[in-house]
Every structure is written in structure tokens, then in C-alpha cells.
Image (cartoon, rainbow, N blue to C red; front, side):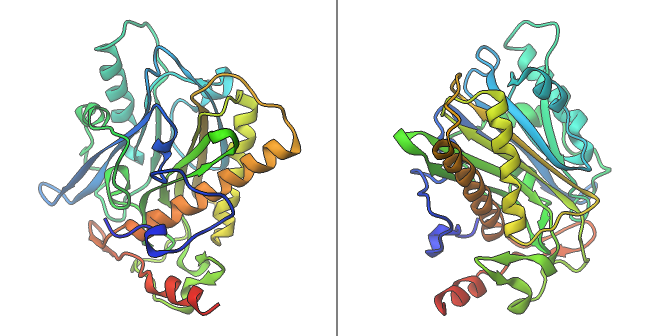
Length: 330
């Protein structure tokens, strides 16, 4: 894992990050990864990432989802939309491993709880450039491993579900960030970044194509991003949906116009039941926090990722010197 965006003295936005600058700055949330990286019997660069609100089955969290472009195969979103809650860990993996993620959650939860129905939440991006996505590398036991390995501190970049992902023509993956709200409440974001075209990338107002060459041999204007927004501020499902929709503004601020074959999904949830008064002051702050968290999380996915050679070619990590030098000149 390379240095993070802020570890290189770069900043974005007006709000301050919380202690770890991770989604786990929101209390009662942990994140775990299982990374699958091997060359036989096929070239595998994939994995599983689990995001776990504490005691989520016994105490479902209030939630909402929003879709910018629906080229995706996630499961569980329909019931989130209907009931406004999540009752399982959230699993991230590759597109063709959603079934394993679903069954893995059912198996894991059934060993701990008694139920006759369950709404597993599994989201995906397509890592088929670096990973032989048709090979069934992700198995149900990897879901349990990712959950059991979860902690408040976790790696970013080319790890877990982010192992085989590319972003804006460079190596992508997992990113995360947080912001402090008023009264010591916190909002955090975690992204699985696998979207955007090299020609579009713009960081802190500077176009990457003016400074560096692309890191992926194959031009890619497709791909997807999964955004998870968490907070301990009491919000109801409708309020969380408003925040989820605003997170997509960060994609445009980084240059992505959105593409026909992109699956752009945000799930927002609160670990505290209730709601806040919908004043301009409250929601201007929440919208800003969602955009800032998501923007910086995507930057962390790019900054922390490392070179990976895989199934159909190589994805190089984005050089970071151009961002540092170009911002110093301003």
C-alpha cells in the first residue's frame, strides 16, 4: 500500500477528517479483506471486502440506496429501497462472484442466527481485465474470512475486492475517507473504484493527461463504482437517500461524465435511528461531507493502489508526483 492522499500533504474540501480518515471513524463499523492473487490454475486478481455494522442482524441499520447508472448486478438493493434498512454485512466482490457473496452471507449468518429469510447485500464491479473473472475463485468461505478479519484499521488500494480493479486508466481499488460533522458526529465513505476514462481524470483542478501517460494499455471508458456512506448521525431512510444521491457529484468533480456501461451505486446508512431537522444548515453540511468523503476516498484508491499484471494486461499505479508538483505551483 502506497501513501495516502493526505499523507502527501494534499487536501480537498473545507471539512476536517476524523482520526483515521476511514469509514471506521464511524463507531461500530469494521472492514475486512480477503485478497486472492495467484497464477495457477488461472490468473486470479480478485477478492472480497466486508463492511460490517456491529450486531447488524440484531439491530438493523437504517439505510437507503441510489443509482446513477444501473449497469450492475448487485443484490439486496430492492429490499433496502422498500424497507429502508440493512440486516447483514455488506459484501463487495467482482461481478461474477455475486452469487458466492450471497451464499457466503447466508452460510455465515445462519451459523449465528435463526431465520427463515434474509436480505444479503452484495455489490460488485467488473475486474475482468486483470482477473480471469470466469474462473470461480471467490468461494463462500472467503466471505466468512473477510468478516472474521474485519477491524477498524484496514488497507486501501489493491486489496480485497479492489485487487483487480482499474480507475481512470490506472490501477484502482479500495479507498476510504471521513469528515467530522457538527456536535462530534462523523460521516465516512468507502469506495470500490473501477470507473472512469484516463482522458477525463482531473484531480484538484489538474488534468492527469497534461502530465502523465495512462497506466492501462487498453482504453477503458466503462467500469463501475460502489460507494458506501456511513454516519452515526440519526437519519431516516429518505434523508439517507438524499445524501446517497449527492455522493455522485464527486465523480463529476474528478472528471467522470458517466458512461452507458457503468454501474454507479451508493448505499448510505446510519448506525443511529432517528432523523434530523431538514434545515439548510444541516443538509448543506451533510451534502458537502458526502461529496468530500467520496472524492477523497476515490483519490485514496488511486494513490494507494500498486502495479498489477494480470489476465489481459498490466495496470500501473497512478504516479502521484504530478499532483504534488502541479498543486505546489499554484
